[in-house]
Length: 353
View 1: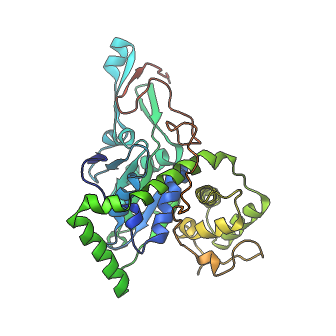
View 2: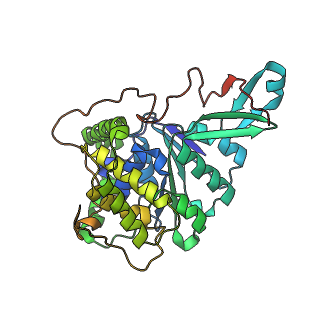
View 3: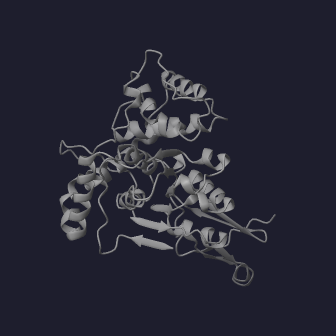
């Protein structure tokens, strides 16, 4: 298990990632609205999956990057309650798990397809709700667990069960790069970073700061953006033509389109925003053959709907508005006063079954 809160050695900058626009966009959307439910990244080894995850953590409020090992127990993940202290002292002594440590950061699971299904269930529940609840012997304790879940997998090593796949908000499939110029650019960037990490990071600091400001601004305006009928129709078209099960895809697509509109400081959500997030929402849910291309004359054209270009930070020098309260994510309830999910000692608020 690894817990990082910045540290002395810089991480490879998010802005310096090359050739991964779809991955960058998916990670940014999940950072703006963790309720989207996490990002599943599928691809062969050496395609910058963990590098991108670490880079995203640097853009978040606490910069926490927590790695969940495959052999972790459920108690190690969700935390434990000291029942004896509850009975003896009248307070719940909570020993935090990885979900608490990842609060306001990134929880990273490599080879998530090899993780026991029970742990994947817990992860996805917490990622979607932003809350972790532990119950032992009739005593219950809940704490905020707002993190960006990033799971990676190599499909050659096995797949996730369809039920678990569907619960991931977004999915991106990475492939090996066979473009000589792009390969050279990636290798040169990595060599330059390894030779002098601080200098390389400093050079990309203005772009990093732009990403941070835009993420914070997007979280602040998220609740004000509303879905009109045209957006709902577009979402319905995509999901119906993809023959998805249930309505989870509709909900995730709406949230992802809203996050994208907020990130781009748009005054409203449009069908074009829906088109640009549809592939990541449907990639692991689609049952129909081929990729649907709904076209009702609104929003993006057929070619535009395939656009997976990553949103880029502003270059006009303007500072995005700050959030009203950085302690919250701009749209989720603030943490209860006096409760620190990492320290883990809280007044007894037990619920008897």
